[in-house]
Length: 272
Image (cartoon, rainbow, N blue to C red; front, top):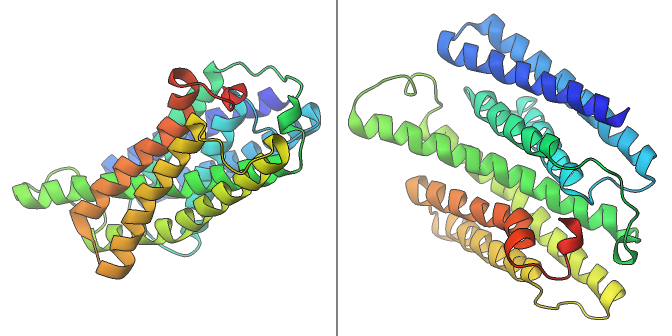
């Protein structure tokens, strides 16, 4: 049942992406409204999918690649929808839907088998640490999307060739504020995720830190974002450098999530 809901929500995200792309090209407001309604419906179905998966597995479904990537996509969608209730960022939904569909495609390719939890994961810290960390990554993904949009818009302006993107993307100032807002939420959550993980490690393995590859790359990622946040909030670092740094830092997030499991191993490889 849970995988059927996953497939339906995946289809919903794909339809939303298609509608957003049509709107991006045509700029017809009724198409944008359709896209928003579809992605909201898909997000609700995706939430139901996660709830049913929890019932089927008997534990928080964030332990396999299928579950983790699916939850990551869910976090991005609801992070975006939370913005829609407070802010208007022109065509942000187009880019968000593309990333969401890409993640759902990866989740669909991964094994959806439900396996028993290894002893280290049999803790109430699992939903706390894992959900906080992935929700943090969701907001950091939104910041990365904002950074990509910033660079595209800046390129149009510098070339003075106002083509497809110029009239369809927000102003540079609006995109910089979007970056700022996403980091204001994502970075504190990332910090809480690392702290909760270290407390869990103490209970599970007897020490707060083991310099396991995933722990090490989590710390590297945190330092990248800490440097970015420091520059933004104390020095007033904005614009292109902040956008580039946001994208680089998010690549570190992706490597921490997947690259470590496949290339470096360690005590966290059970999550691969």
